[in-house]
Amino acid sequence: MFELPEFFTLSKQINSSLRGKIIRSGHLGNTPHKFVWYNRSHDEFEMLTKGKMIGEAWAKGKWLFIPLESGYVLLLGECGGKVLYHPPGSKLPKKYHLYLTFEDDSFFTVTTQMWGAMELYEKGKEGNRKYVQGMRVTPIEPEFTFNYFCRLIQELVSQKKQSVKGLLTQDQIIPGLGNAITQDILFRARLHPRHPIDDLNLQQKQGLFDAILNTVNEVMEKGGRNDEYDLYNKRGSYIRIMDKNSVGNPCPECGSSIEKTQYLGGTCYFCPSCQRLN
Ligand SMILES: [Zn+2]
Image (cartoon, rainbow, N blue to C red):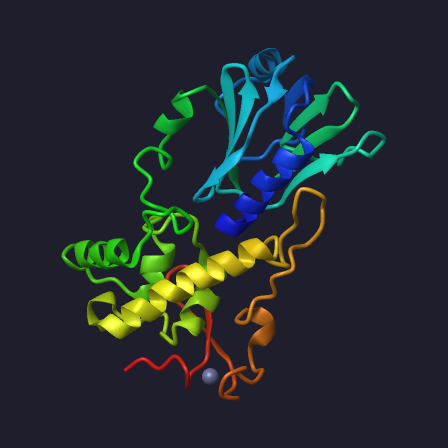
């Protein structure tokens, strides 16, 4: 599944390859998928997208906003899979959940894995969508400061017991982070996934904050993780330190054998020596 760095990479690539293109025709999927969320019928989508121009895209959290000028915004969110640009003469994928053709004979397809939203809003109304409206500050915004991070933890501590993995992956408390990037953030911060947030000292908070920013920035600079594909169907170049391939391998820091555990709806990969649960 895409996380913030992958959505950010897609938005940049859309701006360099798709921006300014005029839509010849727009279609929803050719293959039924229970967990693709649409808000338009096929006919409506076709009618509303025809002749529109691709504007400047942006990413926020796990959402990608693509203006269709004038008057509409295409919203892709919470998805994984393939979001692809196809130069003229390319072959159309067999299955897709969204398909735009352009006047220059190039085209664009989205084929999700698992689930995903593919919705078309009148400009301005995309901000009212559930999970977009009221989204908290994301790690690539200037408001995401250490001060903000400490206040956020304070607010959560007063509500319920929470672990650092929960802080990073649950309820989009820090929008855009997910189970994949979280593994490397916690390794860099030397924190066990179950470490309670009410037990973090100032130094640990600073370490976690730095690890979030450094990891997100590094994955963005490398064009996403190498287990996801970009707009040109190329893998990103960020190789995760902690993932299923690292189980049993020596920790790059101390040489201990990397372990895995099931926790909070996903597998956690960690170093039992560097990420002790005290
Ligand atoms: Zn280690």
